Image (cartoon, rainbow, N blue to C red):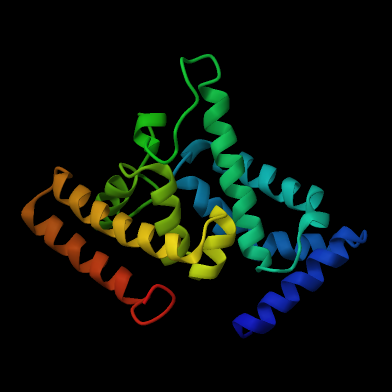
Amino acid sequence: MSSDSGASDDISLLRAWHGGDRSAGQALIRRYHEPVTRFFRTKAFKHAEDLAQRTFLGLAEGADRFSGESSVRAFLFGIARNVLFEFYRSKKKHGPAAPDFAVESVVDLSPGVSTQVAARSEMRVLLQALQRLPADLQTLLELHYWESLSVDELASVFEIPTGTVKSRLHRARGMLHEEMERVEASPALLQSTQTIYAAWLGRKAGHADG
């Protein structure tokens, strides 16, 4: 299925679900359950399934707000981002101040966050570095490189101009490279992690972020 036909199919399924077709909703959930759960695993490990369920509930309840200007998956991940941040806000509701996701990382917000979602040692190093970035930048990188959201889709998710998306991606990549060098690991492991990181970025070379 091409990306265009897939996006069109998503819209048809969402509209049918909003019209009362439960099988259409189940089809959308099956299609995006793993990507949405993966989104939460790297930021709220043991709560991933619960937060994914909240996200799909939000999609069902908010289907009438989908304008069609972006993709259904961008709309869905926008809901997921809001669900994640509301989760962390609720954890700090009795604290001195609400979390600042442009500054605080998931390590700041949840010091015991797990990296065991990654089986390979290199991926654990990469994930540790990701989790030390400001939460919004971690989310931006993961959605772009792991879930293949385009710059336009990211602009919809984060409600910012495409130019701002590109500049934040550039800054996030630089910060991630610096954080990888701070992770405690052997030189050989860091080297192999850098190789994986280069391949990770290379998958997008020449595409959405230029």
